Amino acid sequence: MVVQTSKTSNLLVIPFLLVFLNYSFYCYSQPQIINYTKEKIYLDIDKSDFYTGENIWFKAYLIDSKTHSSETLSKVVYVELIAPNGSILSRKRIKITNGGGHGDFKLGSKLESGAYTIRAYTNYIRNFDQTYFFRKTISINTLKSEVCSFFSTCSVFVVVSSFLASLHDTVVSINPNTKIPKIVFTVLLMAFTFLFLNS
Image (cartoon, rainbow, N blue to C red; front, side, top):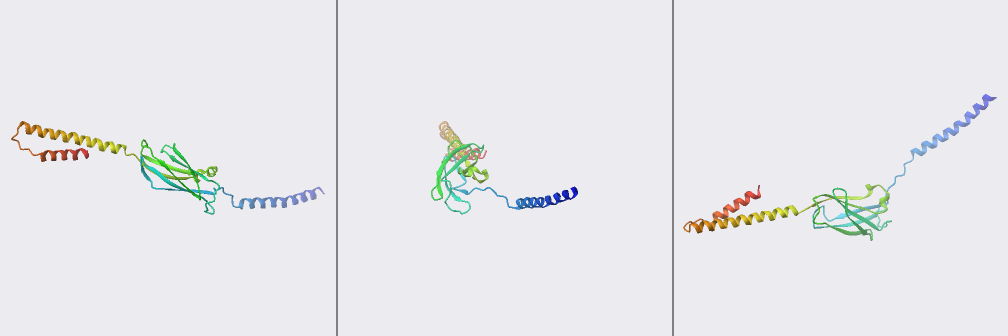
């Protein structure tokens, strides 16, 4: 009698075990729910290479990532200019109307040359991974060294030309019968300038 009871109880456990295993396999075979943002941002930037002192003009587009309509939860986009070292140089708050908004960054004259990043997001998108942020790398170059080089070259040119002109006048004043044309001094000046610029 005891043996029959244990066999009966074992037989009752098997169907429950099969139902449990079947349910477990069913749950794991279902597609997993993936978190995704409902908003998508794109920035249209006027160019990718800039010089210090210029403006970076941009237009922001914010759409629903599923329907591609301009009806979104957010009405504000934050756009940041990030330095090569990762620090945020400037942040703009752009109001979105009918799916778009525009703004600009004024590049200061003291920025160093390098690769900068423009990043855009909404407060809603910040709830997700940063891979949903809009990012674009731009190049900012400085004119400072080129301008200084140009002016230093010009100043050397002026000094040398003044020296050669005074040398010509000195030679002529010492010996008035000397017929050294100024063209010789001009050629010397041009040769010196060429050598200086290519050194």
